[in-house]
Image 1 (cartoon, rainbow, N blue to C red):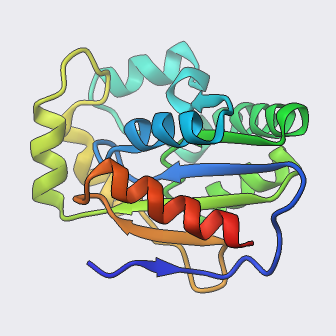
Image 2 (image 1 turned 90 degrees about the vertical axis):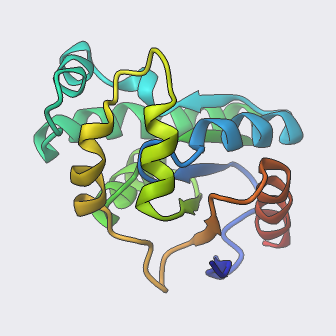
Length: 181
């Protein structure tokens, strides 16, 4: 898989958020934790901003609707913006599967957002998901996530990376992209 980066036209500088995105099981939390450590900034785990009803729905094997997602995206976006304004940078892990979801996060955050899309094949994601313990997202929902996914378009501030690469390589590529702006 080839790395694809979209120029953000100097949207950096000042407060900013870095959102590691992709379907469940691509390594969003792993990369986000390492980025947060490298940048010495807070990590916001998107899953923690879901309502109890959303978590229960997913745990029961039901896909979320847009109506379920909007309040979650608003809560997370506001938190990204507040955290970034306090410390300069915030890192968040969030599926952000559709362009409309990314735009909702941007609007709620009120600071520039850089999206890092972790992409890999469905078989690898399914393998990872089936090996996870104590996670509410069952592998049975992978198909609905892949059906919902809209990969970042050429005009979005986004970097596409191969989720199969080692985390250290993903961190290095992300930092090189974000810091060049």
